[in-house]
Amino acid sequence: MPILGVLLMVNGIPQMQAMFRRKAKAVIAAARTSAKQGGDEVADAVRYLAPRDQGELVASVRVEQADTVKTRKGDREFIGVIVKAGDASTTISNDAGEIFQNARIQEFGTKNMPANPFFFPAWRLNRARIRSRISGSVSKAWKNG
Image (cartoon, rainbow, N blue to C red):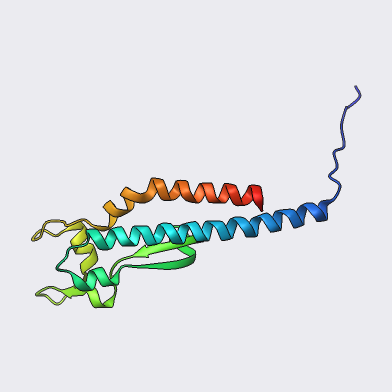
């Protein structure tokens, strides 16, 4: 029984590769710009929702550029930013001398203190809009890139 087949070829492979490289650069730049803008918005919301009497905590909220993120399965490449709260200036210790991060204690509470969430509510409030903006800017960059 004869086998039927078709040979498909793409002419202009170097031109196609150049086009994909150009589009990839545009997409990455657009994603970084939109992510930075979204990160700044989340950081502003976190600062607004943070307890007023926790000045160091409010001052510790920051947006950091990230090329990799740590996951349970190891480091993963990443295009975007990470919003963080808490640093060395916001650590506190208990009577036993154990050191804790005040940002986590405020967010989740302890058996002696109720939770005062500020970080994750700010993220949940903004995430759909930010994700939509990033997707839109990536699509636009791909079409125009």
